[in-house]
Image 1 (cartoon, each protein chain N blue to C red):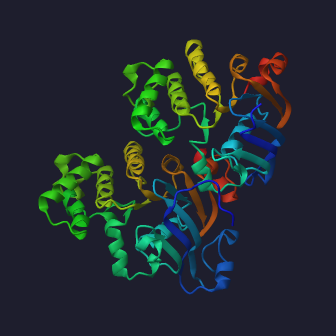
Image 2 (cartoon, rainbow over the protein chains, first blue to last red):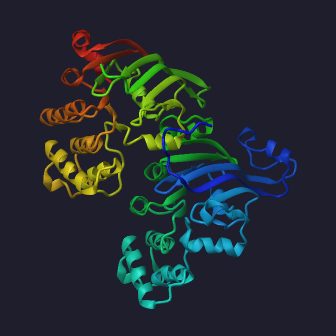
Image 3 (cartoon, chains in turn brown, orange):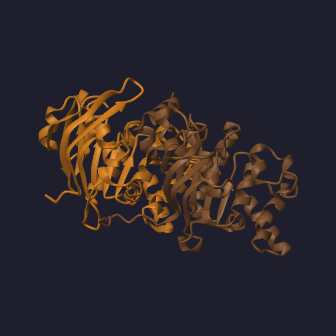
Length: 286
Length: 252
């Protein structure tokens, strides 16, 4: 292949052939599932092809969206990358880990968990997944810091205060337990915790779904500002095109476990190519 | 004349509406023209002629159905915009090709001055330079200094449009696509915006623009391309095409 005259930034995360099955899968099952058949479930074996052959790169300072209806496989992809679920096939390379030489899907569960300390963070739709609700806001942030080797109590307090300030959580709530926080506030604490050790890669799974519209837009503003300032490589899963439009430059569209379109975000919104993308965009715009 | 910056060759665009029985809508057919640095090309033609479609194809907001859109990079090499990968298009936008729409796009809570400054920084200016230029543009566009630190969402339509112009024109890219950039402005502010747009040509920026009035075209265009029903029907120097245009030729 000839070298492109346009220099594009190097990928911070590279995903190739990522797949996730539930139940035994053979080639026939792949051929009998997907958008053409309107299902991710193989009618013969009953196995599920939750995600098949997902590929993308994301560079630092860039955000990629994964869109699709619930059940399309978009959150599965995120959870496989995060290590919350074992994947069935494919590779994920992180530039920050062994200079991208290791397929992190091959690492031991313990090694995968270590990546979550300071290389790859996840912000979940449900703050209960990313936070310990019975612990204070400050304690939740101290957690990844101590995991990364921070020992000085005062330094941890200063860092936690800084992060809460940055995510616009009132500092006088720092020593309140998170269970007593509102939904929007919990989400801000979860973002603060995710950023504690300056990970270069952040995965967001429906970060504003379930929040009131006015609260959601504040959280969205916050995320957008952080993306620009911290030069993060971000993957955002959302069924909400307003979120995708605000945060991302590029997208992939998933249906029944398959990627049916990858596109520039403005192109997806203005000139969607795949029938399913057209349906999604029309539904979102009407 | 300068050698072209962009060559649009035999470009067609057909939309396939899969959810309306696969209906096909052809918006552009076999359009060819080119733009050189410093040229200001105005697109004329009645509503539905394909003017905005053409702008969006050049920015790759629309995918190309057939033809080529060859663009000369600052390195001197040529690329076909229709064949670039998405990350390449992301890299091309901003510094090489810019798009100023009619509306200020949804922005997070940003102050006016911050929004324009960031636009300059994103095109390679230092923060101080960008802030200085932002202040100059905002003053020239008659945005009162008392508004600079407030959030853009509370501005009036005309103020938003002027902030959008300031952000779009700061440290301009080599090709700028303007889609009715002054449509919401009162006469005085429109004059100011037009003056700022006129400077682009002096700076060597290639401009392709759609305006909603003949006066703006008369003031700015060096060349006019006339479209009708998705076809290019005329292309020539502004002074020879302008007298033939009707006011209905510019409604978008």
